[in-house]
Image (cartoon, rainbow over all chains, first blue to last red; front, side):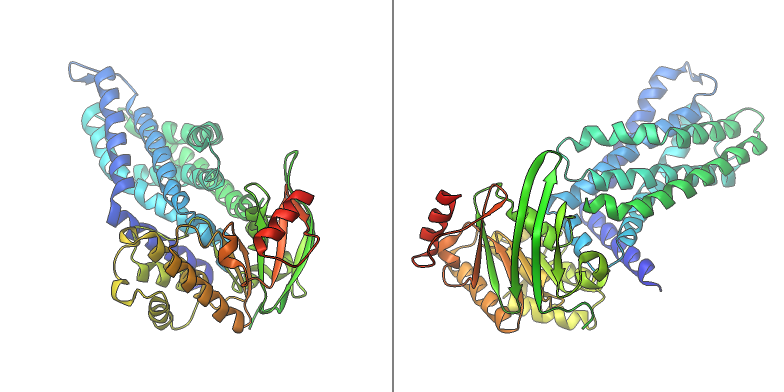
Length: 227
Length: 235
């Protein structure tokens, strides 16, 4: 295994061990995501019939909000005993540390999505199992784009006093393209006649955004963290 | 050993945050076996200087040379020769002491991590409690584990930020003993502290800082506290 992957795997394993012990980030993120969907369900479902075309947007809003919470809590943990600085001190490639933190966040969000998708399907009568491969790919690509930027910003802001406010202020405008592609692609799958071609178009766009965001984040992580 | 050096030179170092100058024109050299004290009031620039020495922060002006190389030239290999204990302890409270040390040992790519960790826990006097979560430890016990984490990879340069904070007399004396042991091994220790009485007699060189600038005491006689007072008054 290359040194890069070895370091990233170590960070992921450490994050998962800490999460298994505390169960803090997953429980709060999941609770928040479920609450968001429930609140939207109270507003947009009348007598058991949801408004047309809202399911995709609600799914992605819940993911964005709960993802922001997960990012904040994950890096708050690294801030409390200043352990992020301890990671940065190690003679490892600093982008590998970023990759490890990103992978941990992705795993966490995948667990949240595993609960959220069936819930949105149930509440908003969305055909979430019509093209599961396409939906999974859209969610995976969208989550990667969102988390790639979010992990970079959350790490940068870890020592900032107003990090809780700054994270969404910086993150949401930057990830608007990911959100648009995610919502439009998912909406194409959720409409009465699913449009797989349109979903694939948005998926390709998401993959492009992912490539750009991940490359930029890996490239800028070290200088941003040491200046 | 890769990235090893026998002295650290701080040359006209400066760091500013926007218009605020945290450090201005700091220079000194520390050789193998030296214990250098960074002394100054809160906000004097001690932690900033330690962060730059630890490669966590980039200097705005001047540079640090580790032997003959700068941070840029040394790369990650240079960091394998630096150990740092921050004001916060750099430990995950949810993990046990052993898990913390094994994690950092592997992150540093050390061979025989389990054996090194067992020795480190022995040094910390925590062999029997190595599998307890760090969150269950007292401040002194955490500080001992944190010091062992900083020393696990056998660094040449040891950076300590307020290492005596919260320690009782016996723990502080044990820490002084450990630093003398590392001094004998040729480790360069640079520590920031307010505990002047504890480090009096331990330090081989003192750098007084005031408002981000180096201050000097006119005399080298008297206690460290007297010299500190004089340096601060003359600044």
